[in-house]
Image (cartoon, rainbow, N blue to C red; front, side):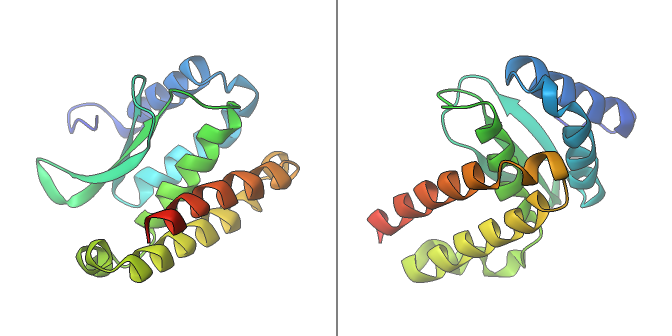
Length: 153
């Protein structure tokens, strides 16, 4: 969780440590450092949820203008799926938040927002050569996630 008393660099370092250890992502430490730093630059935080199966984004209780990404670490087929989830949730951070309440009421709008967040995630994947090499895994994971939204609509 973000704490105003703890320097941002330390918060980023702790998050990356949690992801590399708990998420078995040591091979992607440098990429995670950059991704997590970019999340913080957007006035957003990120926490690891060791006992959760689904990732999500919320506003923090103390600052309604700051988002917090919760990254689930349970039941991942591959560790890199965690990175895809981080980039997807980051895609939501990059969206216009004003549309969010409407999206929850309209399944088609919600699906469009999910697709847009995945498009933003794809743009991020392409920025990192090591991740870009795994693009097929990203597309497979993205498509599976989008299919789950189609079932709900």
